[in-house]
Image 1: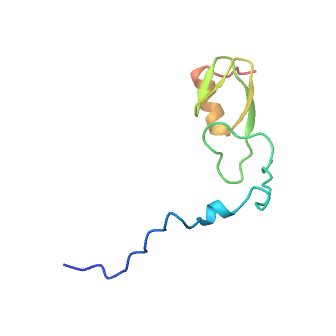
Image 2 (image 1 turned 90 degrees about the vertical axis):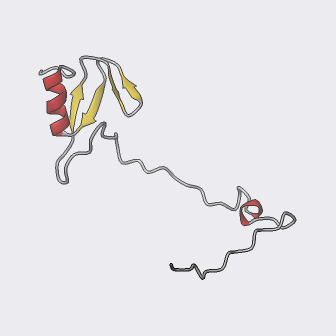
Image 3 (image 1 turned 180 degrees about the vertical axis):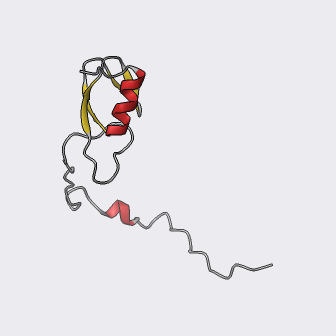
Length: 92
């Protein structure tokens, strides 16, 4: 049976401030959100395939978010075909 020979790190003492406590909000760099356009709903499209915009004809819940009828969403072409087959998207 193999034995673990690594040494454990000593626990931090309660009277010493941790690194997280010494950093203030002003010292942290500001993060800017990445905005690349509307997000694709459902499964991601294959590489090199552009998503398509569809208008929902029925209520749809994907990934914990609800989309009411009439909402236009971006989906992969394959997912749009599956939604049309199930009646969630009008064929017009």
